[in-house]
Length: 138
Image 1: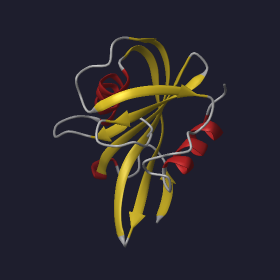
Image 2 (image 1 turned 90 degrees about the vertical axis):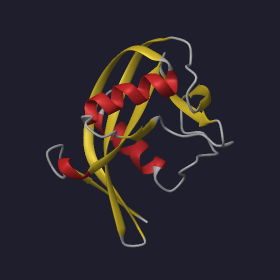
Image 3 (image 1 turned 30 degrees about the vertical axis):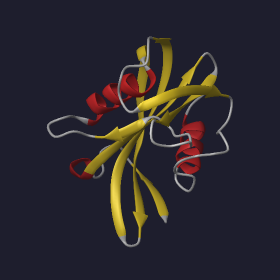
Image 4 (image 1 turned 90 degrees about the horizontal axis):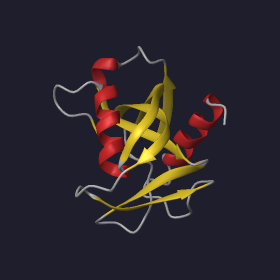
């Protein structure tokens, strides 16, 4: 498994995912999917006809209930597993207001000052988390 980072104008036509490392009240937001008992950084697929920024805003709302926030792209990235490479865009969000969690795929959210121990994508998410930390001032 290999994660690589790129400029925001690289591989734009290949982007399939968005990941949003979000903070709320000075803690990081993590979500738990209804079918899992592990935590993950909010994110998901870019839908057909959707721009990455639109997908990030939609996923942030659907997965966290965030209704007021500042959303900033950090970089594009790729994940290569078994010689198959997929591309995504990494974001940072400063969430100001959270509403109720909608009836989507997320069972619950937590806030923590660091990564939780039980991560769904434990080989990828720590790398993305560190990239966001290196690119923001908190």
